[in-house]
Amino acid sequence: MLKTFSLKNIGKFIFMVELGLKYVQIFKKTFFHPFITLKPAYEELSKERQNYSKEVLNFLNIDVKVHGSLPDENRILYAINHRSLLDIMIMESIFARKNKNGAWIAKQELFESTIYGKFFEYSGCISVDLDNKRGLLSFFKTIKKTFKKVDNMNLYMFPEGERYKGEGITSFQSGASKIAKANKLTIIPVYIKGNNEKIFEDAPYEEKMTVEVYIGNALKSETLEEEYTKFYKSIGAK
Image (spheres, rainbow, N blue to C red):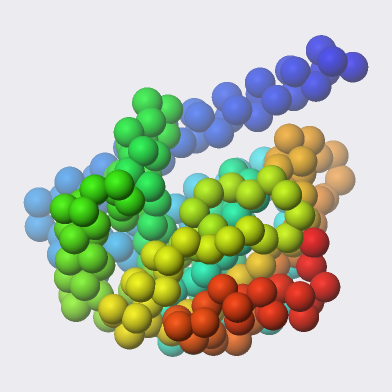
């Protein structure tokens, strides 16, 4: 039993790493293209992130059921709970349904990882160094510049800041509210339901495994955590 479980997980990670390396090369063609402008670059990188995510979910045999719908408009900050490595891929598969263009906000330390740092960097994610005032200033300038040049841009963010292993949600950091307010972005709450750390651990599945995702109505940046908590409780999520 243990041997089977171990081989299953080794195969899963080999698949994801090999696929990730393939996509890093795809991302690099856009990231380092000498003539591409910011808007088509983000559109292309978003599409390829979505393709990567769909391939992984297909390999793991995981389906995503959505309650609610993504807004047609852009310039939105999607505030998403975070429990699992699956979360980004789940959301990218949803964004693919409406050809959404956007970027993930991620801690600088993720870009420095020897395993997946280049994936984050070359796929169009935006890094933020929370412990560096100069880095924070540069981050906010990058966001403002990007929205000025990319009119169909969206941001994807985990307000909790890191994966939360408990049930429900944990306290939000202040970044999401500040970013939304500074750039006049609409905030849309998203809740990914279930113990997706365990779901990922047990994948791939012989029979289809379904993950449920709830998309809510716009929230105010000033009361983001309070309103998100009400949204979360309204769906009876765990």
